[in-house]
Length: 231
Length: 231
Image 1 (tube, rainbow over the protein chains, first blue to last red):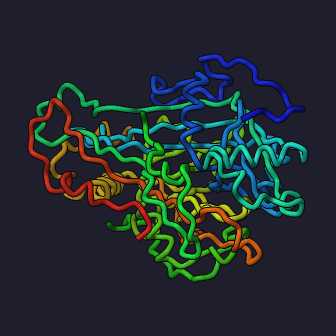
Image 2: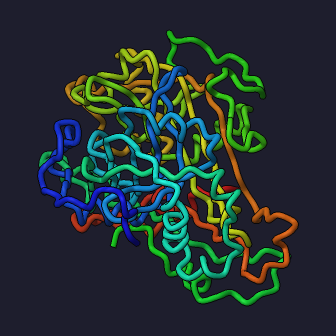
Image 3: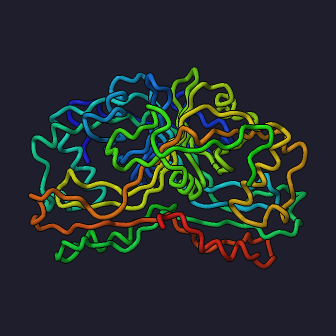
């Protein structure tokens, strides 16, 4: 994992909001601005949602993502409308959310969810041609360590048809809720079951393609150990 | 589940895009515009991401959601910036995505993901005061059938402090990828494991609050049977 050479190095991160728009407004005590929290949530993600705007109005689209250093990366076809718009958009926002559970309180209005989320503000920049292949290899390494050396690598035509963009994590905020319901004192004797219904994005057993007769390599066998839930 | 009385009834849905911006651009054969596909994906969701714009630029924020009839509902504090902006925003976009798996092809550039997603375009409208309580009860029914009658119900003050918004599903599109990798003919003999790594948002065993001594009701015991993956 290396930041593309010609692009800026990683600056330090503060534990206060990087900007007014990054400050968590609702339930501010759940806001986290430290680099480790932001990175942990980003690294547990395989996809993000991106908000952008064009002549048709607002858009909110999901796409695969990965982190290298202090940047979140995305990629896609050169023909992608989203990637074309994001290259020149002065403002975009990216959100990553892990839903960790439903919180069942004694009062209807104290029900909530447990989650880990990050919102990133800023503008995307294009990753230069000479760094694209290494960035895409880093993505493969994030998904399946060791696989890049085994697959049929991308050729010049495939690489040329692909755009890689990145956005700095400098203007990012995390928001996390975990744990038990938080009932009002006056409701504590209310006779209803309360607690947490946890949930987690869970790997299921790998499904080898019917046309494939090869034994599963180590990283395939380890798929079931992957964790996308709160640790 | 009933649509709020004074608001428009549900119109019919076509299986072609409702508008130019709803048309799926990338891999159009994965696009689905029929009502049943959109509703199935929405109903499997507990949360969505919403794109909106204010003086600070673009935002992309997660929030809980539920469906009643042909509308997606969200709620929150009256003080929520997002809810305030969405009430008057001429354009917003909502995205729901279920990540169903990683697809490991023989060539690097044919790797992809399996997913079910919906994007909704349009403007949010406020749910009138007289319908708020019933809408929030429908949300509880969606989460935990039967619980609304057991919890300490919201009082007038709590209800007054809460805003409920909804957006029509008329201008929505679904996009779905499922199944095996799709390798090029020329790559079929490449000697690398290929197949699918499925994943699913999976309910974990309910955690009763330590302060609660009540037996779990039926809907709690059934939590582990809930399905958020592709059926």
